[in-house]
Image (cartoon, rainbow, N blue to C red; front, side, top):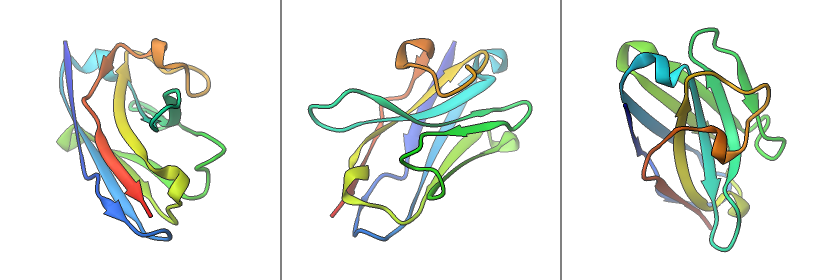
Length: 124
């Protein structure tokens, strides 16, 4: 079993930055792939970025490429999402997700086995 706990969400002005954290615990094999998703009110959950924790291979949604960076600290069992140049359209609940291996791209939400409860990001 894997537990994921997100933190770092906040309200910021457009152009600002935030760093989200996802602290993971549980069986390491089940979190070889870690991802960030987001869901705005009335919209479907969409993939933002994912990282293969073994190779460090990353993949980003086009909407965040060049602005967001996913990274990991294996010693802390934590995955980060550095978000720069934030836009109002980035406003959403951000979720951390895990699976035992990564899809070629981001994958659909149904791909991921484990989820955190989310952290709110509001950009105005």
